Structures are given as structure tokens and as C-alpha cells.
Image (tube, rainbow, N blue to C red; front, side, top):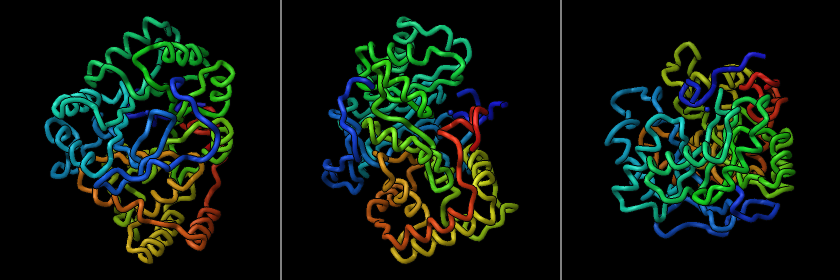
Length: 368
């Protein structure tokens, strides 16, 4: 099968240190003073806000409307403070997200360090890199990320491996675990088979970052079961499908939607796989009905649905600016009752049930 170009930024750019126990996500950490974003433990020593600021939007290709664009320069750096003040203290980036690591580093440097903030980055392997994994190579790239982020140690580094046909991904995980500046190791877009291999090799990640939403429920095809059995947490991205899961698109024909960012283009393809635009509108209608009954929004109902799934420690919300921070704070106030979940399930059942494992479709190695 041909690989689909759904990687981060529209280009080739898309842990061992903590002990853990199997079971559900612990919410014992609760809320920090003055904030309305709940917190949760990924593993001992690593506590995060359950809403995580995704920084893919800082990689380029996500600017959209110029008037609201805060994805570059000083405006991008200044926005971080608004998220932290709201209780969103965890940021997720990658070594392939263009200037994203550097922008975070400028923010951390300006505030006097990373105390009270958690930064996740990624170690991404493509092409020749997948054949050249050595401790020296891994250490050099980790140092480059630390220099950009202006951090002596990294809270979490997630491995992304582009081609499973190249078998050194276990070696890469071992090298990351041996790097003393990497506190915890995770993975992103890995399937169950790979997690089983990591477990056998003694380098089971503490977290797997995967695409998971009402439109993409592939983690339920074995991933959540494995993670529950072995204490691995899930950190979903794509929760709002690039903003398409929102009130803005309720009742709007596909022909009138401006797919002006890479995210929207990607998730339009996901909608097509899941049941098409008519089915998507039926889903938005049900979510709107539930949202109205709770004084909430479609986006927050969709977010609450994902946050309540097994093993989900938090959700990534990609943001081009801080305009919706107050909306993100309101997510924790949405409580979905059995009747709400039944209504949502009835619409999902009308769509096409995903058959594949996480990210296999994007890799061209399996079905959606």
C-alpha cells in the first residue's frame, strides 16, 4: 500500500524512567489553585494538565486567517502565558515541528525556566535515520532538542518511527532510555504489536500519543485493552478534528467549508472514511443537542467524550492562538450521562466502524 502524506506539518515532519501500575488514569491530583483544568498522573513524578497545548500548529502550514494567527514570532511566544495562567501547563511538540521547540524555549527562557510547566517532545525517525540508530546519534539529537527548548532535562520524549519494515525501533527506545537527560520515554502513533515488542525488550513506554476522537476510534481495536493491562496511558490528538467538531460547522454543506489548514484537510479525509459529510452533520446535530442541554459547546462535548475513555490521561488541543482558552477550561464541567452516551453511540453505529490499528491507514499498512 502507498503511504498517505498525513504527517505533521504536511511534510515528512506527523519511558522508561517512571514505574507504573495497570488500571485507570488517576485523577487524584485534581485541580491546581486558581485553575479549572484537572490534572492527572502519567506515571510517578510526571503530572500533567488534562488539556495539553499541542504545538503542531507552530510548525508552519496552519496560519489560516491572518487576523487570528498567533503561530509565529513574538505572538506565539506570548500566547503560552495565557495557557499556563488558565491551568494548561503541558505543551507537546516535536523535533520536526519547524520552529516549535525554539518558540517554547524562548517562552521558558523569558519566564525564568520550566518550573510548573511540562514539555513533551518527540524523537522522529524517517529515511536513513532508521538505519543509523546509535547511542551517539540519539544523544546528539536529544541534546539539540534540549538546546532549543532551553531545558537541562526533558520531561518526556516520544518515539515516532516511520517504517516498521526498518527494525531498529527497539534499539531507538533503548537508546532513549539510556540517555540520562530524558526523564521518561513514550511513543506516538505506535500499534499494539510494537508495544508488545517494547514490553518484551524491557522498554515499555509510559504513554502512547494517538489519534482518537469521535471520528477515529481505532484505539478501541485492541490498544486500550493492552494499555489497561500494562499501565500505559493514552494521549489523544485530533480530538476536535482540526476544529471541524465544533458549532461552526453545524449545518454547513461541505462545499461551503474552507479547508485552509493542513489539519482541516487531513480530518476531512477521516470524515470521509468514517461515514461522509451527511453522517458527520448528523453527529454534529446530536452533539449540539447534548451541548445545549448542558450550556456547553459541541467542541467541549466531543472533548469530554474522549477524556472519559479508558486510559486517556489527557487530550491534545491544537491552537493557533489563545482565543479559546476559556472554552478549554469549561471542558471539565461537562458531564456526559448514560443517555447522552447512548445518543452519541447510535449515530456512531450508523457510520463505518474503524477496523485498523492506530496509524496503520496513514502508513498504508492496513485499513482505517
